[in-house]
Image (cartoon, rainbow, N blue to C red; front, top):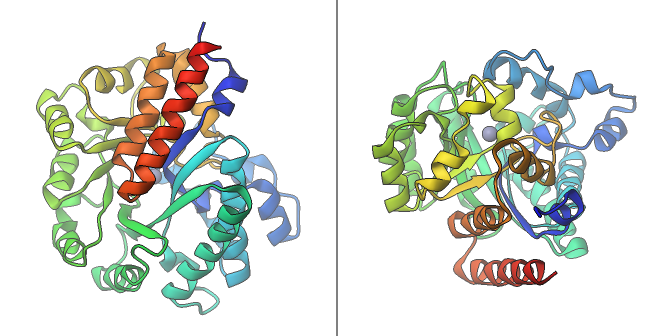
Length: 334
Ligand SMILES: [Zn+2]
């Protein structure tokens, strides 16, 4: 019999694609805003039509991420939510440029979030890495200035860069030069690509040197692109709830998780935005099990894939892999 919800919750899990702003807990937002916040303000509506509409839900949480204290609380809150469902390693991402309304520098924003994450690590033992997001709609100088500031934290909490925002309006081809410069900084990166139907964006992201692809849905049915990801060990960060909400696929039947698994692509399952999408990683695991018949063995495979393609250092990867394999063996003997 497949693992039940409480077993899925107990299972050590790895989260690679999660936005801090879209994952602030309702309790934290209530505390910061000093008022009740109805679900309709926090979560995407069922009638959401596309990614651009989905992204409209981020202004409220971003208003809660403008002081060093609130940012520290956001980092701590995130680790606490990971601990609550046994996520043992998490990469969390955000755009420091969006937290400067009260005059903080990008370095101060990053430091404040890291302080909260570190406090969480010490209390709950959850390991983490920060991915900083360049934004598609911002001028290149602004993105570069942020990435330059973030590169000072490489290996000290920051593990990689990303490119986020409205993919349909800003194709990957416009950012090749930017990521050439990021590569020159010695900063690895994952890039949002193929969330809005363009396989070319995935091809360009790989050509730019992306080690992972956020979503990558558009390489459904593209054997060549899938083979490239398999051969180069390029991780694919699927986020099932979010992908259905943003209409990255037209229907559940078209979702490519099983196709990618069978093609040997290093695919992973993630939440994207815990609050905006209204899900935990446990929920995602339960959902793929129910929706597409993902087996227990495949759930462990997805978790091991996540360790393998994570931006953690080799020593941490070995430790995480041991922990996951041990838990997998124990689960089998129950
Ligand atoms: Zn995302």
